[in-house]
Image (tube, rainbow, N blue to C red; front, top):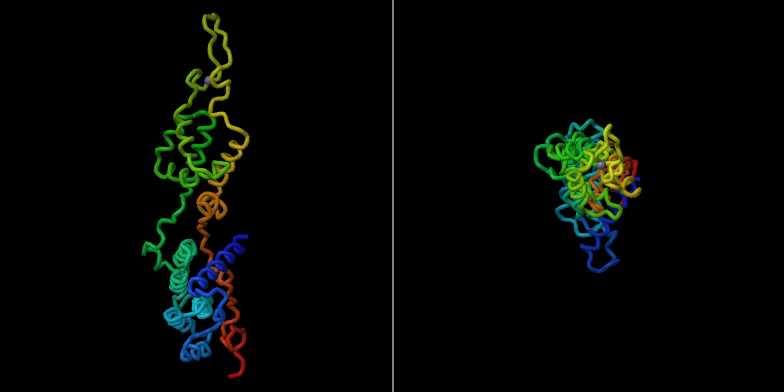
Amino acid sequence: MARILIAVVLVVLGTARAAARQPEAGAPGETLVTLPEELVSRLRGLDPARPAEYFTLGEEVADVYQTPADRQIAQHLFVLAFELDRRQGGTARLAGSACMALADLATLERDRKWLWALARAVDPRFQRTGWGEDDRGATRLDAYRAATVLGLVRSGDGVAAQQLLKEPGVRETIRRYERLLSESGDTGGLRVIESEAQRWPCPECANARIVKKFGTNPPEYRLCTNCGGHPGPKLSIAQLVAQLRFESRLLRGIQRSWSAQIAADGGEPIRDPEPSELAAALGVDPAAPYWRNGAWVKAPGKP
Ligand SMILES: [Zn+2]
């Protein structure tokens, strides 16, 4: 599913870029390669045994491209450099740089972030450069504490919930994904949680659920009329389901869940960087690394 969506996103991205560079929609040239003969001849001379040539040629094409077809060739070259380098054990150290080059060609911020994340995943040299540092997800501890806060508030343990909310990262985690708490995807979930945490424990029975009847000796007890024996906020079934689903997502690692990201960020997914998905996402067949007669093919053929 994720893979299909990535492909769709990238196809849309490619189309948008094509439209931007081609004011006359549908004009001839969409599939026209306009590269200088020198570059085309180097395309024909590429050999998968030398992945670095794919990368450097990709950079040159990216510098001069004019049509969507040219741009696609640059993209294709970077993906092939990425795949060929990885197959050779990363000796040429091209994979991370190829991702960065692809990120430069991307027009959507989320695609760029995904490519930056992929660069970091495949090449530690990109980990300290600050690329996309804002996309760090919640840590497992933050997520666990955030889920615990919800459970505490639900059972009316407001004091413990408020204490946990003061731990670093907990409020931020709930706020970041709070849209998941609302049926309509609205914000404000954290505010509700915080105000409920302040309302409980039950001001009448202090969560004992029963109170002593006035003037009885030996004491007789009645059910607390404030909380009705159930301390904590009154939730509809839908609200309870939303809370439980939210907790379940937190505990399964919400920061890695693409669908949760879409729901929480309103369609700004942060995809897991998965090297094996790159070629498919960009529609490149890594088994066809030879450029012959205007197409990528599997066998070099006769010279
Ligand atoms: Zn009570």
